Image 1 (cartoon, rainbow, N blue to C red):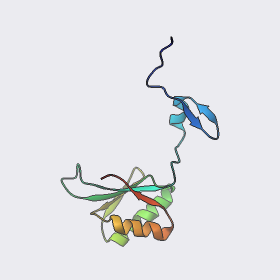
Image 2 (cartoon, rainbow, N blue to C red):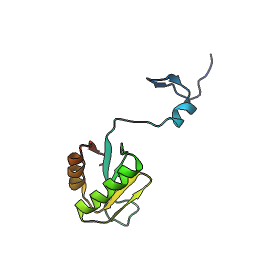
Image 3 (tube, helix red, strand yellow):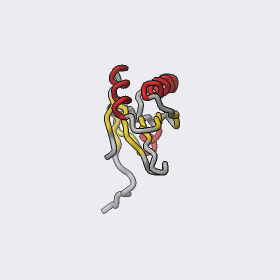
Length: 110
């Protein structure tokens, strides 16, 4: 009996059919077009930071959204690796701005 490698798994793409693991890693995953929102404190000396990630936007739209969120929250923040970080716990305000723009957001984490 042939043993399967536990690191390999079957991957299926509805457009292209069955894929090899290497091909699947190269194709971008579009998930469910919902941005994720969480509060982080680890590695920040106890300071809370609201993080918005997995945005279904391009780079220019993400930059504009970051500016709008910082103004709406009256707080500082940054854009790192496609993630928007707003200083402080502003999850409710971020959700309100996203809803106003017509974008879906889901809270993640604890």
